[in-house]
Image (cartoon, rainbow, N blue to C red; front, top):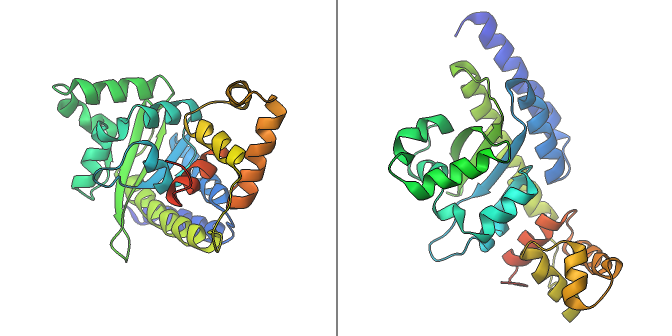
Length: 248
């Protein structure tokens, strides 16, 4: 790397760290990641610990740290258990070296299931991606991916983005631990039912239909759930509820 390029890369990384220190929730962390990665074509970010043996796709939502993935695609990905067929996940679990999704093409040529995952991701503008795996101080392995319609990431940028990924994942883990509600969470039967349907990917109006209540009533249940769990959106509510064993 040339001295000027190194200086620019270092300045960019330090700027990101300063912005990250001001992040107070996971949405802020995701926003800062994308703000600093957008010049390289990144439109989406997802970071999560890896699935454990015997877990199902939906339980994996409980391990999500950063989520700016297309919502419809994430719902489909989770409901169909694509995490266990995703070649990017398999590659990241087996090595910590950053890689571009295009490097997986020779592998998925003879893997129809893996090819299907990648092709369908492309339909949601996740056409090109960059993934790195990180190991935390307590031994957790975390996957971190940036994706978009077209990425412009060179070798030196790859190193900088790997640093950004490590700082972002560490900050996300710290925030998740800090913000976890203390003590038991008690949901009413109707709140639990609404949350269970939300985990199935149903919108508020659909939840209202199956529960024989209005869309407003379904939204009211979900707002109460989010408040009790200390989260700010539906995906985080489902993830936190699964983590706490409130739904399956």
